[in-house]
Picture 1 (spheres, helix red, strand yellow):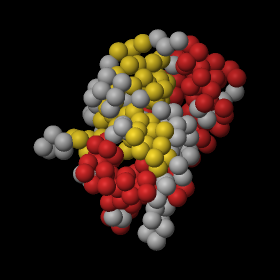
Picture 2 (spheres, helix red, strand yellow; picture 1 turned 120 degrees about the horizontal axis):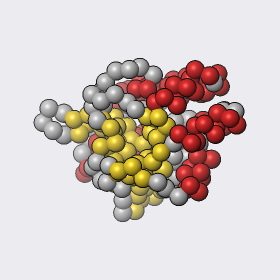
Picture 3 (cartoon, one colour; picture 1 turned 135 degrees about the vertical axis):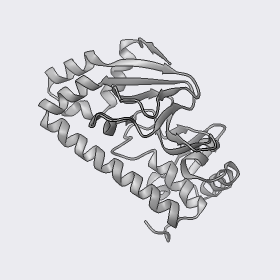
Picture 4 (cartoon, one colour; picture 1 turned 90 degrees about the vertical axis):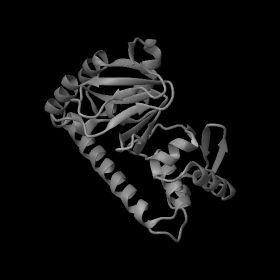
Length: 235
């Protein structure tokens, strides 16, 4: 992991696509923008590790992150993924305690960081930012409850469908591109099924005209239908 300086226009383009800065006043936006910094991560590198104290809110300018823990036998257990345009780690900034998970890059990834002090400054002074954060946290909680529900009630193809759809959540990840750079192995980690079963599920979802697959990517054709697949399963 290394701290880097991206061209200002690239950071600005990402910043303008994000929803939360729009609730800030102009003076608040200026303070926050000046505090931002970027980091570069290679495949498999940790963005943050379990048991450390969070020092920033993390956005993904490009690449893909997996939020995970490691099992006793050393295998990653992925809770969710964060694609380009998403932000992660707000919960750990709201309480001073050790992280209970890891965040790692799955491919070359550039992250944008809002320091803890600036995040806390916004919470102290901006009512609209607090409203945004309450909504964001509520959606995050709903996402994890849905993950547990789907894991217990749905068959593997439906779990793969819901897992992919979750990366396009309209509140948590509103700027995820329609073409998602993700491998079958990564999907398997996220929904708890084998890579071979993911492969079969992707063929089924493609036959249903919900996605189009290629080497290392998935193009989502109908997120709404994907998030309800199949229609007769529990919602």
